[in-house]
Length: 199
Ligand code: UDP
Image (cartoon, rainbow, N blue to C red; front, top):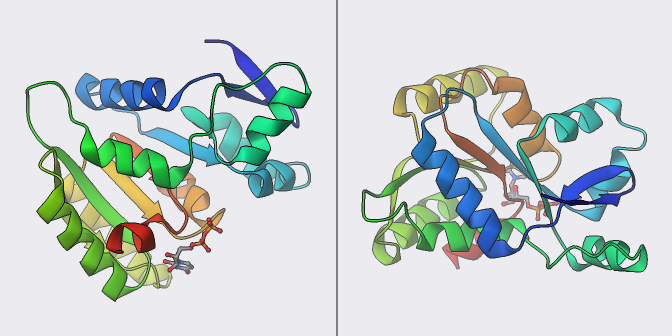
């Protein structure tokens, strides 16, 4: 893979389709390590300049995607263009539509958004995504103690994909903090995408 540097952060030059393929490959692979996908938007890229903890989260991620036209434009201006934008929301919708070839459904845990949104999003996915199975969910307004309970629940369910809709950079911080305890194959921070899925 080749990269384009955005404010010193190397973003791989992958299309949406290639990004989805990579994630599905990780799901089929059964690695012990959690694959953290960070959808890099301009706000996170900027914040990395003065927030060294956030920068280490980004450096440690398994995959970065160009979240937003701003990131793609910067890469074009620098003469090393990223092929297209891969936003958290588009990526989630594409993943929900996909599945490992002729095997089984991909399991999801949805974390974040309001209780109403979370419930509606899960129902919507159940109804319209034959390749996806929501095995657990929790709204995104919890304290420290409940956070621990949620992490244990996720770990027990071992979802293929943990979708974290807590807003950026809260989602990225949550995933990074609990990386070794979540027992998920892939974790993605997706901003307000569950509100969109819930319609
Ligand atoms: N959210 C949450 N818990 C919080 C703060 C936010 O679950 O403590 C949810 C909120 O309901 C919304 C999403 O996270 O669904 C935030 O979306 P936003 O568009 O603000 O995120 P960004 O695009 O800034 O990452």
